[in-house]
Structures are given as structure tokens and as C-alpha cells.
Image (tube, rainbow, N blue to C red):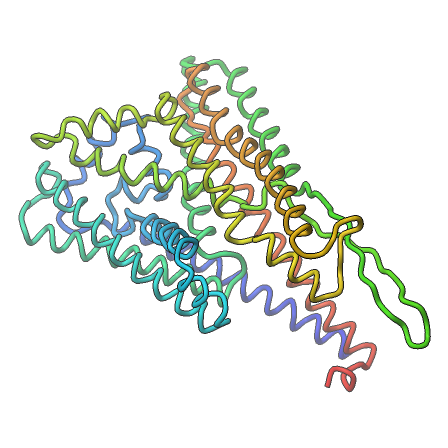
Length: 434
């Protein structure tokens, strides 16, 4: 009976966390429909009709439609992601910051979180000011002027900081990464409308139904390919020498698992945010006097254009290597093996082990970056060549699949944890735990 009670408590906690995640997503979706005071919805709608298929539409997808409605959450978590990128760069290039964040444990993590929040606030104010001034100068407000600009800035900044807070609450009281789940909800929210438009276009004969079905089949194959690569591992053999009492030393074999894509979905998110940040500014300010060149930059960065492909691919490759090197340093792995008494067969401990692990990770990261570039860019080429209005973004597909995989992994981990507690209770090992 006690075992059943522990299982029940574990399931209750799991359901409680899942309900909180669902509640947070509902709150977020409600917020995307709250408009900034003083916005003219007809002019905003006309602006997006004129910029279909550009980066403005891609930015709108990542905001879950909030940008098109010009809601208080139009900036979404883009300032937070940008601040996290800047903090990672500073941490990698500044030894004092790296020592502060990594050697002070929980206190260092809290300090890092505080710095990222402050960076998010600064970037949100900067981007909000640009949006508000552009909206006022281009006649998108009912009563343009300083009052509208101030109100819009406060609304945009408040919406972004609320989303950051909501994501942190999901991290603590829910399951999964809160910021990733918000981005996932933004992407998925536009899927029903996109499917409806595609089937309506097929019904009216604008596109072939067979072509639409082939695209759906391609999407399923792409999902299967992403799952397969994300689960792929390169296992490095590791031996652990243990000495039993009054006996010779015995060796236990294990392995060090290294994923092909160790950076996960972070490079795609970082690359998208960096491409969207200057492109969004050029969209708003490109029509102002003396800033016509920004409009040309915006057109050159349209998905499918050569400059967009080159910049996006380069950013993905860079962040694959950068994030892997920051989060999984070969020296730390070698030091952990040495402290635990492990060694690689045929490899001398120390610098030789570090060099071997670094070479393996470098080769894996090359293939991982190629995989991510292919997944993010090939669907765009197919859609452009087939002239299909339904935008099947490889980046959005990659983010959605990886976030779901991570979410399910954490749910399974929680279930295993509750089963482990039940097993310990059933075995009456409570006294040993003390």
C-alpha cells in the first residue's frame, strides 16, 4: 500500500506540473491577443499583407501571431535570446565571468540569470523604442505622438519581461524548458491556419492536391530524420579501475556517450534571432528618409535569397561549434574521468585524452552542423521551387520536434524518479539512505 501511495503521489505531482505548463501556455496565448493601446488594426493588417513571404512574416511566426496583431507580446522572447547570446559570448571571452558563473555553484547561476534579465530589459527597451517610433512615424497609430510612443514602449517591454518570468516559472513548477516551450507554442499556434489555407488553395485549384500530399509526406520524413539524428550517439569506451580488498585491481568497462548534435536546437534559435533582429529594424525604418538602403537589406535577407542562405548557414555552423565548446569542454570531460578513476583504452590520461575527446567532438559537430543546415534550409528551397504558399519552415520544424523530444524525455525522467522512490520504499532501504 505504501508503494502504491508513493506512485500515486508521483503521478499527482506530474499531473500538477503538466497542468501548470498548460496553464502557462494558455496565459501566453491570451496575451498575444491583447493589443497595444492606440494601434490602428486596419493599417497593421495592410502592412502585413504587403510583406507576405518576407522576414516580417517569419518574425510573426516566432511571435505566435502577436506581431501581426501588434499585441503587448509582439517582441516575444527574442530580446531574452539575444541577451543569452551576448552573455555566452562574454562568458567565453572573459575569464573572470567564466570563473564567477561556473565556480560559485548556485550563487553563480543566480548571478548569471540576473545579468541575462538585465540584458533582456535593455534590449527590450531598445527594440520597443524602435518599434514604437516606427509605428508612430508611419501612421500606424490612431493618435501618433510622444504619448503613444511611451505607452507602446511600456507595453512591449512589460510583455517581454512577463514572458521571461513565465518561462522561469515553468522551469521551476512545470516540466521542460519554459522559453523553449513558449517558442514551441508560438510555432504550433500558426499550424492550423497554415494547413487550412493550404487545403483551401488546393480546393480552389491554385495548387495540386498531390503536391500538397507530397509535401506532407516530406514533412513526416523530415520529422523521422530529425528524431533519428537527435538520438544518434558516438560512444567512447571508458574503463574504470577498481581495487577490491585483498585482490588484484579489476577493470569495469563503460562508455562516454556523445551526441551527433550536442548543441541541440540552440544554434537554430540563435541564428534565427540574429537574422530577425536587423531585418525587423530594416522593415520598420526602411521607408524613412535616408534609410532606403535598409529596405534593400531586408529584401536581401528574405528567406530563399542567396545572402539569407549564406548568413543563416554561417550562423548555424558557428553556434554549433561555439555552444558545444562552451557547454561541453573537452578538458572538463577529461578531468571528470580522471577524478572518477576512468581512462580511455589506448589513450594516455591528461592532454592526450583531452585532444582525443576534442577531435571526436569536432568531427561530430561538423556533421551536426551540416545536418542542422540541411534541415533548416532544404525545406525552403523545396517550397520556393514548387511555388507552394504554405511555408514549411525547416527551422520551425526542427525547433518543434526537438522541444517535444526534450519535453517527453523529462516526463519519462520524472516517472522513473517516482518509480525509483517506490522501489526504495518497497525494499525498506530507508535506513541505508541516512
